[in-house]
Length: 148
Image (cartoon, rainbow, N blue to C red; front, top):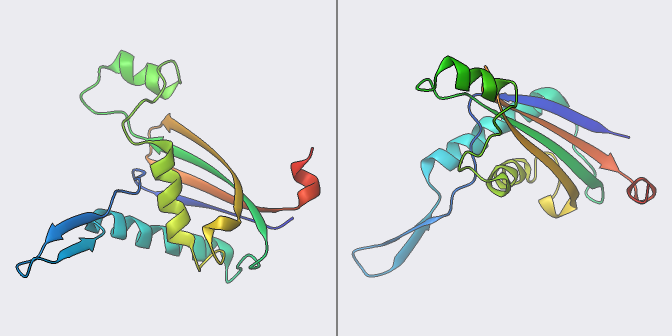
């Protein structure tokens, strides 16, 4: 079984929707916000360093595990901070799991795998932590492993 694990430093971010603006000539222009593009570009070197030139086969079936670690806001009391760090209060920050998954999927298209349609399962968790970061593990699976 082949796998690649890596850690992305900094606060996790999710994929945002494309923006549409009307040009002076009346045409609609669509673009991705700079923050989304920058985060996708941030993810790639972390994968490259961990994979050391490895790329999953074009017909590989993959599973992915993601753990997003968010900082506790500095405005929170010591009691609330401790409760959040020790999982007494669960993370319900607005950033949805689907947006986190999508930004990782899109960042790794054509780099880790041919297309994110190769990913058959995803596990994701969001937690508070002292150091903001994201852990990603990609594993090649086989059909017999899915039936267990």
